[in-house]
Length: 419
Image 1 (tube, rainbow, N blue to C red):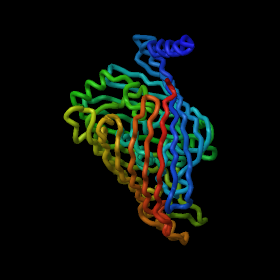
Image 2: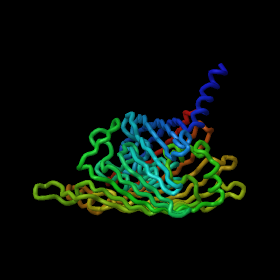
Image 3: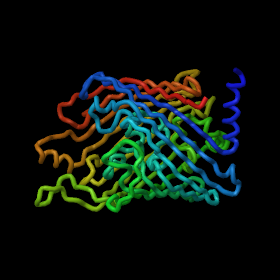
Image 4: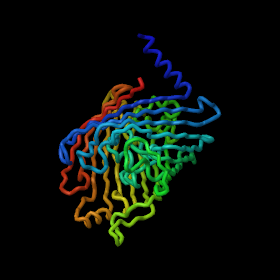
């Protein structure tokens, strides 16, 4: 029996030494809408992540490249169907399916430049607040609501990606600029299941550029050099393996611009036939910041992080024209629980004036803003299991007048299947 157990471990170690890393993580959100919203029900959303990374440098020392494959197994329901919100109380909820989510090659040049091409999750590097996106369950803390809902089939991110090319340049030790161009319509808008790679002329293109400033402490630099991917927190890395964006830093400030060339319908203008007037493209801008404001004296890795984000989108075609979010995260708040994280965040999605006008013209009214408050606490049981109780209070769910504020209770279970 001992030989049967030891043999797979030896194989995994050998593959890792050769630059081949396989990871599997199963995440489940069990969320119950206990008050307000639409239905008093409980829903489970599940996400099985299968990742294969090949570090070509270890196979070919003179070739600095990475190959990355990422498969998704999605199952369960969508808790937001019970809540009726527009921001999404679970950031892993999606239609049941198996799909290839990402498949790309990244090449590094002169330690200052890199480019990446293939099926690509744009929000793995753009519009990322690492401290928030790896902890909160609500989707708006991962990608701003106004950006995530843009385009004809949303952004190239979970759960559907498109072909893209990303470049990044390290201008100074602290300043980076990155840009991406991708197919403007990820997947198939008429079929959410499976992997669809379709390049059609009327898809147009999505483009974004982000300028990011990072501040590093001495401890950050040490961690960046010494910590391997496996030693960093699971949610921090399992969707970011092989990329060039920093994982460990003391502060980050970023400004991003984005736009689509895709033809889209205006919300509040119709032609003589009563059909929506179309316009060529749409655009938006966002700014974000996160900062480690306090470190505990005996452990620099514990302490308080603040974060905030604001974004604006073209109000003529985007329902959500503004988004504001922020909060704080404390690592090691409870004595002797040095890895656990406690967080409180607020996310506000604001309807555009044109959307509200279009609803009035159709004989309906809407509230201006949906606001979600989230309180969550991540309990690191061991390397294989994280349990995360979660509380969300949604004000004006879906911005529907008369819909009562929703109270959502539940938890996230994250199981590392590698050991």
